[in-house]
Length: 199
Image 1: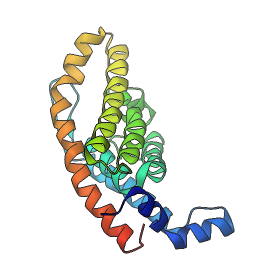
Image 2 (image 1 turned 60 degrees about the vertical axis):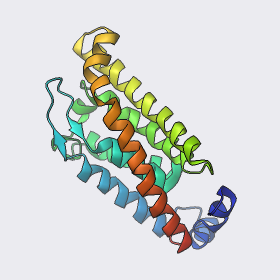
Image 3 (image 1 turned 180 degrees about the vertical axis):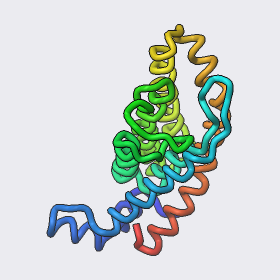
Image 4 (image 1 turned 120 degrees about the vertical axis):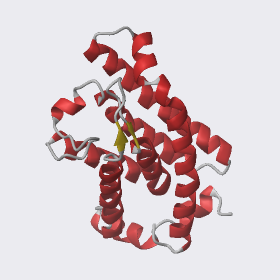
């Protein structure tokens, strides 16, 4: 099994050489970042409406997978691009929605929280201890839900506890399972890409 040091040494030698010369991301990095922004947009459309107005989606899985495969830096850039596309009106958010109004709406806090979630997932995948890696990822999930509940409470003019029971509690188990499944898949994808010197 590759340890963290070996992973860092093997990561995109060609890309690093290109970055040293130009000071810019390599073409390969740009492709991966764009590809995962697209994956985020596609998986966001798989949703089941709920009475609370918070649909069940594969967004949590997609964000976690992005962090686990790309690590925290590239994963964060990919997630920010996804959010930026949505902010300017591209219908990448769940339900083919886009626009600043979605980010400012009752579900917008979760979208902002994706930035922290992908960062912690990216940090988690670099840990040799898999249990520790998943626990670190859960911190990101908790922050995401915290942002989501706070904005839901403000927009819907509800107290924090009621907002938590409506917007967060029903989805926690599903989201935790999504993170674990994303870790399993992301770890394998990342390991294969590193072994082939493609990441």
